[in-house]
Image (cartoon, rainbow, N blue to C red; front, top):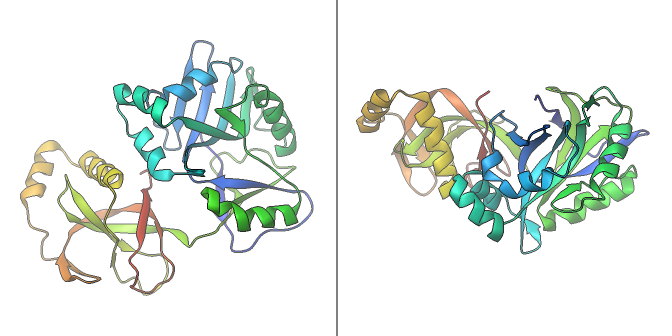
Length: 304
């Protein structure tokens, strides 16, 4: 199932026929209710049903032949917590059942693609939105429609105030728009300077990467060393590296030196790193093109 994408904008779009939704900071998730069961699909296409048994159980209430598009989030201390979503997504099936109790997931649905076997992707967003609300409001949490407004002034207020709740920004859609599967047909306005960067290398070992060597899409293309990776990101990067190599090649590379490649790290000077060719892609937060503070890696992009 190819999902719709959004192009980044720098200012709030205004005009007739626009709808505004909060942009949640979670994992994109397609919920598929078949005649027999429920399948949860990540944006990459990977099936992650076992990681979110609480959402799968709730989605059984949906009519057979229903497909939803949305974001899975975990609320903690009054705000969404992306690290906790990562923890849920990476859990083994046995661990997922435990985490479903202590860190329950919430599904912020922003579109319905099929309903009771009827393909709705050719319908307008305005019509799909009405059907989504009618479908989910009677069910209640953890399956909920995202808030939506057509008032740009209210949207601007959301943009200024909702970051305290962990909301990244806004997604803007046309009311008369069909579902743009696989295309950047929507617009997104983020509060932070978040961008995709090329991962040209890493420090540490393939099994325990410590930081990423990045080239940002702006500036002079000088490689930068990220801030230290979280435990969840180390696991993601290690898995991505392992998937690129045969076991024998991976073992040989783990024992091999970095080949003389070095990069300047803030506070550490020149340090060796292991190059990656072709690069990976990561979503990073960086306030400017300056070398200080270092970029913060938010997540690794799927290789698709």
